[in-house]
Length: 449
Image 1 (cartoon, rainbow, N blue to C red):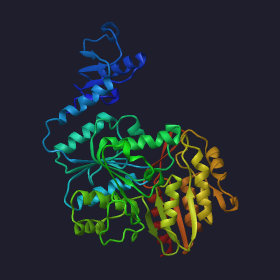
Image 2 (image 1 turned 180 degrees about the horizontal axis):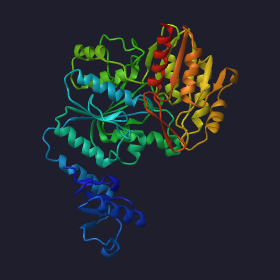
Image 3 (image 1 turned 90 degrees about the vertical axis):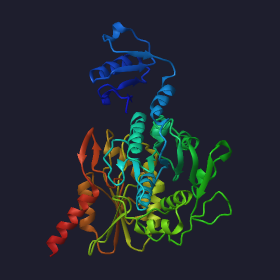
């Protein structure tokens, strides 16, 4: 039973509200809201009187509520005999892809897999959309309870740096955790790179076994003596280090540009540790299908090739350019998010400038920040501005790219992937890069007939 909730907006009838708000004014406001939503009682850390509450609802005032609340969320699992294998996946780039591909690979082995990710929540592949990458702690325990009731063999959770830092996964003991890589990101929230890295590494202390990307400089330099769990690595290269897992399967990990090689290596490592045979792992890999909006390739007869991807960091941009390295002319359409780390805008601009013969700068979740300011920051990283065109409307930008593309051109549409909205000026504007491009292609082919 889902007995407790920490968000007064999501209280259901007869649930107990746990108010973690330390500000007395906000605390009483949240409690009164929870009462109107049907809470049967509440627990708080802020002293209050029955008169200020104006309600006969039972309540408890207690110290150290954050730690106690975790034990309350966990209490339903203490008597559970059969528990799924829980896998937490974090990293700057590739964590969502790794979550979904691992779920797909395990499902191909007739395993029931629960998923909590930015792509949705549910038993794979039936995922329902979610507003979070890593949901609040009470919802995470609720999902785990549902996955246990549905007798899932595995539960895979996408773990964001903010989610780890804010304690949304506190109390979880992961059988395995994966860290795909660490690059600069979310500095607007974490303030500096050290804080960001430490938030990611927090997952290691919540794991029985942690698997890290040895080819990521920030990960192979970590002092592993600080961690008591079993730490292993994956790598594209051959190593004498016994902690690097041998993932050789007789499968060419670099054979398909639709999949990130490191995601496949991570999946092979997990399945090997879970005692799947090499032939079974290889069979799963051969049946994997590409993910929407993640290195998604759309080939055309006369308009070249289009690659749509979520890439939004310098490392992700470098990776996708290198994996699709060809002799064709390259056109890149991209933007940068507003109200976020401004330093990476010029960095991204430099990388795009290096690989592209044409550049289209457009909108990408400018939020409350002026598009002109974001555009200016990006341009600071681009030396040859003559090859740049700025088209604020993302639809118009994609239409311009499509119209002027030729059969020998490679077109990158980066930043949004399979997202369905653009956030601009506090508005939610419906848009999907994949759907819009396919409609353009459909209309073009219809007229060509």
